[in-house]
Image 1 (tube, rainbow, N blue to C red):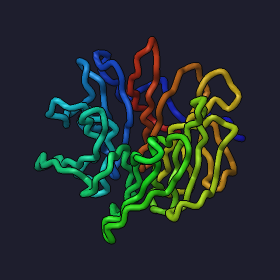
Image 2: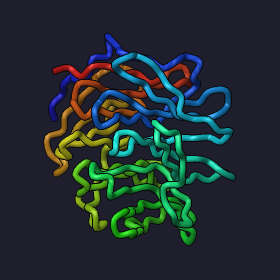
Image 3: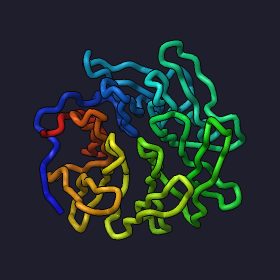
Length: 276
Protein backbone atom coordinates (compact mmCIF):
# COMPACT_ATOMS: atom_id res chain seq x y z
CA UNK A 1 0.00 0.00 0.00
CA UNK A 2 1.16 3.53 -0.81
CA UNK A 3 0.57 6.18 1.87
CA UNK A 4 0.15 9.58 0.25
CA UNK A 5 -1.48 12.77 1.51
CA UNK A 6 -3.26 13.60 -1.78
CA UNK A 7 -5.92 15.97 -0.47
CA UNK A 8 -5.24 19.52 0.73
CA UNK A 9 -7.44 20.02 3.80
CA UNK A 10 -5.54 23.09 5.00
CA UNK A 11 -7.05 25.45 2.41
CA UNK A 12 -10.71 24.52 1.82
CA UNK A 13 -12.58 26.04 -1.11
CA UNK A 14 -15.97 25.71 0.59
CA UNK A 15 -17.42 24.65 3.95
CA UNK A 16 -21.15 24.13 4.38
CA UNK A 17 -23.15 26.47 6.59
CA UNK A 18 -22.84 25.77 10.31
CA UNK A 19 -26.64 26.11 10.61
CA UNK A 20 -26.94 22.92 8.54
CA UNK A 21 -27.06 20.12 11.11
CA UNK A 22 -25.98 17.37 8.70
CA UNK A 23 -24.90 16.82 5.10
CA UNK A 24 -24.93 13.72 2.88
CA UNK A 25 -24.48 12.38 -0.66
CA UNK A 26 -22.23 14.90 -2.45
CA UNK A 27 -22.05 14.31 -6.21
CA UNK A 28 -20.16 16.27 -8.89
CA UNK A 29 -21.60 17.34 -12.22
CA UNK A 30 -19.86 15.89 -15.28
CA UNK A 31 -18.12 19.23 -15.99
CA UNK A 32 -16.79 19.45 -12.39
CA UNK A 33 -18.38 22.91 -11.98
CA UNK A 34 -21.23 22.02 -9.61
CA UNK A 35 -21.74 19.78 -6.59
CA UNK A 36 -25.17 18.59 -5.51
CA UNK A 37 -25.78 17.39 -1.95
CA UNK A 38 -28.53 17.13 0.65
CA UNK A 39 -28.53 19.01 3.94
CA UNK A 40 -30.64 18.78 7.09
CA UNK A 41 -31.96 22.23 7.98
CA UNK A 42 -34.78 23.16 10.37
CA UNK A 43 -35.91 19.56 10.78
CA UNK A 44 -36.05 18.67 7.06
CA UNK A 45 -33.73 17.29 4.37
CA UNK A 46 -33.36 19.54 1.30
CA UNK A 47 -31.28 19.37 -1.88
CA UNK A 48 -28.65 22.04 -2.59
CA UNK A 49 -26.17 22.84 -5.35
CA UNK A 50 -22.79 24.43 -4.76
CA UNK A 51 -21.61 26.33 -7.87
CA UNK A 52 -17.83 26.37 -7.97
CA UNK A 53 -17.16 29.29 -10.40
CA UNK A 54 -19.39 31.70 -8.44
CA UNK A 55 -18.80 30.23 -4.97
CA UNK A 56 -22.56 30.19 -4.38
CA UNK A 57 -25.22 27.80 -3.07
CA UNK A 58 -28.62 27.22 -4.69
CA UNK A 59 -31.61 25.44 -3.16
CA UNK A 60 -33.38 22.83 -5.30
CA UNK A 61 -36.08 21.66 -2.87
CA UNK A 62 -39.48 23.38 -2.83
CA UNK A 63 -41.79 20.92 -1.08
CA UNK A 64 -42.71 19.87 2.43
CA UNK A 65 -41.27 16.40 1.87
CA UNK A 66 -37.79 15.26 2.86
CA UNK A 67 -35.61 15.13 -0.27
CA UNK A 68 -32.34 13.23 0.03
CA UNK A 69 -29.53 11.30 -1.71
CA UNK A 70 -29.24 13.47 -4.85
CA UNK A 71 -27.13 12.62 -7.88
CA UNK A 72 -26.54 14.34 -11.20
CA UNK A 73 -28.10 12.85 -14.30
CA UNK A 74 -25.50 12.50 -17.07
CA UNK A 75 -27.37 15.10 -19.17
CA UNK A 76 -25.73 17.67 -16.87
CA UNK A 77 -28.96 19.55 -16.31
CA UNK A 78 -31.10 17.19 -14.24
CA UNK A 79 -30.86 15.86 -10.70
CA UNK A 80 -32.30 12.60 -9.41
CA UNK A 81 -33.12 12.38 -5.70
CA UNK A 82 -35.11 10.46 -3.08
CA UNK A 83 -38.48 11.94 -2.22
CA UNK A 84 -39.69 10.53 1.11
CA UNK A 85 -43.42 9.82 1.33
CA UNK A 86 -45.07 7.85 4.13
CA UNK A 87 -41.65 6.84 5.40
CA UNK A 88 -40.43 5.32 2.12
CA UNK A 89 -38.38 6.88 -0.71
CA UNK A 90 -39.24 7.15 -4.40
CA UNK A 91 -36.81 8.37 -7.04
CA UNK A 92 -37.71 11.68 -8.68
CA UNK A 93 -35.94 13.68 -11.37
CA UNK A 94 -35.90 17.48 -11.69
CA UNK A 95 -34.83 19.55 -14.68
CA UNK A 96 -32.89 22.39 -13.03
CA UNK A 97 -33.64 24.78 -15.91
CA UNK A 98 -37.42 24.32 -16.08
CA UNK A 99 -37.90 23.00 -12.51
CA UNK A 100 -40.13 20.27 -13.95
CA UNK A 101 -40.27 17.25 -11.62
CA UNK A 102 -41.48 13.73 -12.26
CA UNK A 103 -41.03 10.20 -10.99
CA UNK A 104 -37.93 8.57 -12.51
CA UNK A 105 -39.29 5.05 -12.95
CA UNK A 106 -42.75 4.07 -14.09
CA UNK A 107 -42.70 1.01 -11.84
CA UNK A 108 -44.36 0.09 -8.56
CA UNK A 109 -41.21 -0.20 -6.46
CA UNK A 110 -39.83 1.66 -3.46
CA UNK A 111 -36.49 2.94 -4.71
CA UNK A 112 -33.56 4.99 -3.45
CA UNK A 113 -29.96 6.12 -4.12
CA UNK A 114 -29.72 6.23 -7.92
CA UNK A 115 -26.37 6.04 -9.73
CA UNK A 116 -26.02 6.38 -13.52
CA UNK A 117 -23.60 5.23 -16.17
CA UNK A 118 -22.21 8.09 -18.27
CA UNK A 119 -24.55 7.24 -21.15
CA UNK A 120 -27.62 7.87 -18.98
CA UNK A 121 -29.24 4.73 -20.41
CA UNK A 122 -28.51 2.61 -17.35
CA UNK A 123 -29.16 3.26 -13.67
CA UNK A 124 -28.52 1.21 -10.57
CA UNK A 125 -30.33 1.87 -7.30
CA UNK A 126 -31.61 0.35 -4.09
CA UNK A 127 -35.01 -1.29 -4.40
CA UNK A 128 -37.11 -2.67 -1.56
CA UNK A 129 -37.52 -6.45 -1.79
CA UNK A 130 -41.03 -7.05 -0.47
CA UNK A 131 -40.40 -10.76 0.14
CA UNK A 132 -37.15 -10.38 2.10
CA UNK A 133 -38.21 -7.07 3.63
CA UNK A 134 -34.87 -5.41 2.94
CA UNK A 135 -33.01 -3.27 0.39
CA UNK A 136 -31.27 -4.88 -2.59
CA UNK A 137 -29.41 -3.63 -5.68
CA UNK A 138 -31.48 -3.24 -8.85
CA UNK A 139 -30.71 -1.98 -12.35
CA UNK A 140 -32.94 -0.42 -14.98
CA UNK A 141 -32.29 -0.08 -18.70
CA UNK A 142 -34.17 2.93 -20.11
CA UNK A 143 -33.71 1.75 -23.72
CA UNK A 144 -35.23 -1.70 -23.25
CA UNK A 145 -37.47 -0.88 -20.26
CA UNK A 146 -35.79 -3.69 -18.34
CA UNK A 147 -35.87 -3.82 -14.52
CA UNK A 148 -33.51 -6.36 -12.94
CA UNK A 149 -32.78 -7.33 -9.33
CA UNK A 150 -29.06 -8.06 -9.06
CA UNK A 151 -28.69 -9.09 -5.41
CA UNK A 152 -30.51 -11.54 -3.16
CA UNK A 153 -28.77 -11.05 0.18
CA UNK A 154 -30.29 -11.90 3.55
CA UNK A 155 -29.36 -8.41 4.79
CA UNK A 156 -29.68 -4.98 3.22
CA UNK A 157 -27.37 -3.27 0.73
CA UNK A 158 -26.39 0.40 0.65
CA UNK A 159 -24.64 3.03 -1.50
CA UNK A 160 -24.76 1.45 -4.99
CA UNK A 161 -22.32 3.18 -7.31
CA UNK A 162 -22.16 2.71 -11.11
CA UNK A 163 -18.79 2.99 -12.81
CA UNK A 164 -18.85 5.74 -15.47
CA UNK A 165 -18.36 3.17 -18.26
CA UNK A 166 -21.45 1.25 -17.09
CA UNK A 167 -19.60 -2.06 -16.61
CA UNK A 168 -19.21 -2.31 -12.81
CA UNK A 169 -21.33 -1.64 -9.73
CA UNK A 170 -19.95 -1.13 -6.24
CA UNK A 171 -22.14 -1.36 -3.14
CA UNK A 172 -22.03 -1.98 0.59
CA UNK A 173 -23.41 -5.18 2.06
CA UNK A 174 -24.43 -4.55 5.67
CA UNK A 175 -24.23 -7.51 8.04
CA UNK A 176 -26.57 -8.18 10.94
CA UNK A 177 -23.87 -6.74 13.23
CA UNK A 178 -23.76 -3.63 10.97
CA UNK A 179 -20.29 -4.37 9.58
CA UNK A 180 -19.86 -3.50 5.90
CA UNK A 181 -18.36 -5.44 3.01
CA UNK A 182 -17.69 -3.60 -0.23
CA UNK A 183 -18.69 -5.71 -3.23
CA UNK A 184 -18.20 -5.10 -6.97
CA UNK A 185 -20.52 -6.68 -9.54
CA UNK A 186 -20.60 -6.61 -13.30
CA UNK A 187 -23.78 -5.58 -15.13
CA UNK A 188 -25.06 -9.16 -15.04
CA UNK A 189 -24.75 -9.41 -11.25
CA UNK A 190 -21.63 -11.58 -11.08
CA UNK A 191 -19.27 -10.79 -8.18
CA UNK A 192 -15.92 -9.41 -9.37
CA UNK A 193 -14.43 -8.26 -6.06
CA UNK A 194 -15.28 -8.35 -2.35
CA UNK A 195 -13.42 -6.35 0.32
CA UNK A 196 -14.44 -8.25 3.42
CA UNK A 197 -11.51 -7.38 5.71
CA UNK A 198 -11.34 -3.58 5.44
CA UNK A 199 -14.78 -2.50 6.74
CA UNK A 200 -14.90 -0.41 3.56
CA UNK A 201 -17.81 1.96 2.91
CA UNK A 202 -18.99 4.94 0.81
CA UNK A 203 -17.55 3.91 -2.58
CA UNK A 204 -17.03 6.30 -5.49
CA UNK A 205 -15.35 5.90 -8.91
CA UNK A 206 -12.72 7.91 -10.73
CA UNK A 207 -13.67 9.31 -14.12
CA UNK A 208 -11.96 6.49 -16.08
CA UNK A 209 -13.60 3.61 -14.15
CA UNK A 210 -10.08 2.31 -13.45
CA UNK A 211 -9.89 3.09 -9.72
CA UNK A 212 -12.41 3.59 -6.94
CA UNK A 213 -12.25 5.37 -3.59
CA UNK A 214 -13.74 4.35 -0.26
CA UNK A 215 -13.62 4.97 3.49
CA UNK A 216 -11.95 2.47 5.80
CA UNK A 217 -10.27 2.20 9.18
CA UNK A 218 -7.98 -0.49 7.71
CA UNK A 219 -6.93 -1.57 11.19
CA UNK A 220 -6.44 1.99 12.43
CA UNK A 221 -8.33 3.91 15.10
CA UNK A 222 -9.84 6.45 12.69
CA UNK A 223 -11.33 6.39 9.21
CA UNK A 224 -9.24 7.46 6.21
CA UNK A 225 -9.86 7.70 2.47
CA UNK A 226 -8.31 5.05 0.23
CA UNK A 227 -8.09 4.36 -3.49
CA UNK A 228 -7.89 0.95 -5.12
CA UNK A 229 -7.66 -0.40 -8.64
CA UNK A 230 -10.83 -2.15 -9.72
CA UNK A 231 -8.95 -5.49 -9.78
CA UNK A 232 -8.16 -5.06 -6.08
CA UNK A 233 -4.49 -4.11 -6.49
CA UNK A 234 -2.32 -1.11 -5.59
CA UNK A 235 -4.14 0.46 -2.65
CA UNK A 236 -3.29 4.11 -1.97
CA UNK A 237 -4.10 5.98 1.26
CA UNK A 238 -5.29 9.47 0.26
CA UNK A 239 -5.60 11.03 3.72
CA UNK A 240 -3.68 10.74 6.96
CA UNK A 241 -5.27 12.83 9.69
CA UNK A 242 -7.35 12.70 12.85
CA UNK A 243 -10.58 13.78 11.18
CA UNK A 244 -13.70 11.63 11.11
CA UNK A 245 -14.51 11.36 7.40
CA UNK A 246 -18.00 10.14 6.52
CA UNK A 247 -18.12 10.63 2.75
CA UNK A 248 -15.88 11.40 -0.21
CA UNK A 249 -16.11 12.03 -3.93
CA UNK A 250 -13.58 13.37 -6.41
CA UNK A 251 -14.48 15.74 -9.26
CA UNK A 252 -14.32 14.18 -12.75
CA UNK A 253 -11.43 16.48 -13.73
CA UNK A 254 -9.47 15.22 -10.71
CA UNK A 255 -8.87 18.72 -9.30
CA UNK A 256 -11.27 18.84 -6.34
CA UNK A 257 -12.54 16.61 -3.55
CA UNK A 258 -15.79 16.84 -1.61
CA UNK A 259 -15.51 15.36 1.87
CA UNK A 260 -18.07 15.00 4.65
CA UNK A 261 -16.43 15.43 8.05
CA UNK A 262 -18.11 14.77 11.39
CA UNK A 263 -17.19 16.94 14.36
CA UNK A 264 -19.13 17.55 17.58
CA UNK A 265 -22.01 15.39 16.26
CA UNK A 266 -22.38 17.62 13.18
CA UNK A 267 -21.54 16.60 9.63
CA UNK A 268 -20.22 19.34 7.36
CA UNK A 269 -19.27 19.38 3.70
CA UNK A 270 -15.75 20.48 2.82
CA UNK A 271 -14.62 21.08 -0.76
CA UNK A 272 -10.88 21.23 -1.23
CA UNK A 273 -8.21 20.77 -3.89
CA UNK A 274 -6.52 17.51 -4.79
CA UNK A 275 -2.75 17.76 -4.55
CA UNK A 276 -1.12 17.22 -7.94
